[in-house]
Length: 582
Image (cartoon, rainbow, N blue to C red; front, side):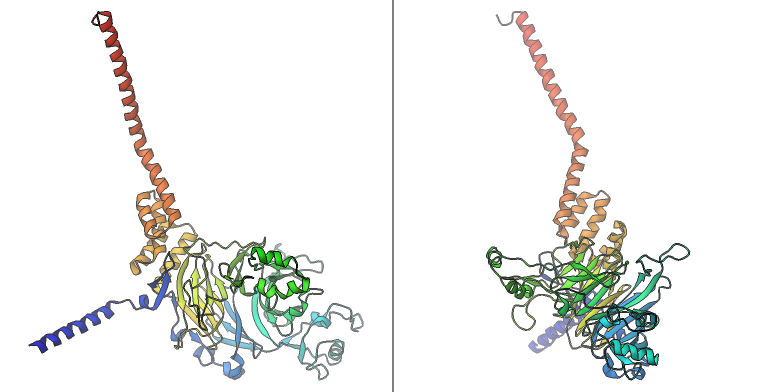
């Protein structure tokens, strides 16, 4: 009898476990989030990658890759750029490899198209520095200032630096020389205006500025940036070491973006003073977005007594370099860097993400529960000790940006107010786990991740949970609080612990004048600022609603009291006149 009871209880327990796991949302158990007070809570992952979303040399989309390349050619991918044609909307993906120093081209579906391993010099660039008779003018600012090696052409020029002898050899052979890159680390494609000899924009017959598609390649080892014609891959311009700059020996360009005027923003390894802003012509203009550190009172006093050489030796302690950057459609520069190390050894990770405007001011909004800095809870010992280290950043069309954390290979997504929306990715042994991200890019709602460790491109797609969040944020971005609230309600239904969703619902109630209900939602969302605003409006409504009646009652009581007093005085006077007091 006892044995039957034990077996029965065991079956009940097994059934309970089965029911429990059957009723759990698998996504909800995979991810995590941070609450308003900085604690870890269970949450659905934001974006996932499936097996068919991984693109490498063995994938079907890359058929033909091994015919044109060795497997080792795609061994150390360092950067990528997704370009969308403004007219046809056709997309092209560019990837550079720092080991093989080749440029790989893919279409919008990440199907392999071609490989570019060397880049011919454009005729106008070759002839720069030649007189009317074709003789070399050595003092002319031309290719004699470029640290490039010729990999094809005449036998006299092959493998040598482009100099007077190489140029003379070109004149003899008339074979177009090609440039060999020795350290490709960055790629970017954009349109820039075509200018005349006087630096003015050239206009077409309709008065519109003529634009040219240009691919920018950071050739770090050769200390230069190549500007290519996007159709022919010919070198049309070179940005070389700025003349007379005090960082000339550290001009190692690794990442680049440009604005609509054709000015380039360069991250150079070893340059701690900030991001280099280069003119259209390739001249150095100024530094942008310097990462200053905080000095204690005594450190500031001691620095006043140090020599210039001693101060130069401290520059790596006082500042940090940028890791990556991107630019949005409004011209704001988004950058990521490591945490700043202060002079006293402490670290400051509050400004690892910046949004820099034209006035060189960081205008990134940090209005979320916590500042956008990745993981809030970290371990203090071991190889993974410390906070997040951002290695790449991407932004979409409605202000949502994602940063890649190289410490734990996670993706953190924030809205334009600095609210953490969701966390994706992570380190693991699965093929769908990120190994070593070097670049990321938005492709619609998806995110492309260039994984150097896995030697592939990964396409992350938002889960249903993240799609609702994205839609809600997009609606809020365009000012549609009602539609946003519907999406936020879907988020609450999926995860009642997601506090930001309650704030979104509360905003709708607030806009409808339902302040008491909005206060309840803001309280659930732990938003003190919006709760205070709703409480003020609720209080004002109460005053407007009840003040006239209350004021009327008070006024009536005052009048009644006055009337009673007058009546009493009249009564007393009448009694006095009648002699009742005698």
